[in-house]
Image 1 (cartoon, one colour):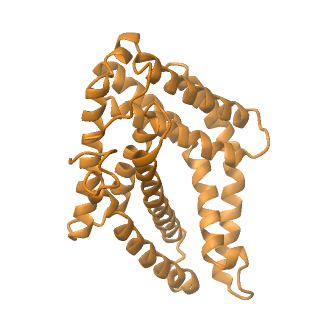
Image 2 (cartoon, one colour; image 1 turned 120 degrees about the vertical axis):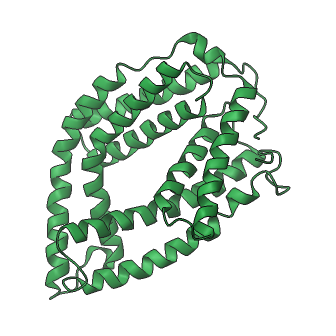
Length: 289
């Protein structure tokens, strides 16, 4: 499906260097979190992104790397990311609320919104302590990650093409289900798009020409999916807190408008999944799936 960019030295060292570099960056952010330094929320965000990229890269090599080794490492990356999820969720909920409701300036006299924001601020503050605890556990999990050298050597261009083909097919299937009304699971599409995006980012060599254009389009789509997911998560939190439309009408009105806008954006931007490998601009980066 993908014409993997030619690059000298393609082989075990390319994949090994990619994983080791990302592992090192993830460990660095986790160490900063555990040490209680500044910008904890930022370090949590970057660490989780790196862990998700590592998991997606592992999935790309799904039929290349030894099955037991693959499963073990995917679980380790997943569990390490989950240890940080609680602290990250609190920060994202507050940021999403502030963006949605007047930049965090709650209208005077709106008791429902004032109550909601006070709870969100409190939970976000508690997240830093949970992040430090989670970072220690995540570092321990990453210490168990290992890939045999022979597994890397099996990851040639033909195997990578097959992995990319499967990832695009899965993302395209989720998108078509949404367009045709067979599904409303935007979160599933988001996971598949992230897998494809991170896999393309993992390929050796600089992203130029067709691959760079494909990455740019996928980033735009992934951002809209991420915003839609953040809004959904915040809405679920409001329901759990007993803050429904009767208690917070301003929030629910704004949330409904934003959700409609984002869903339309996703369906429009997701068309790139159909064009990859078919349009002249992307044919060199993707072949028909």
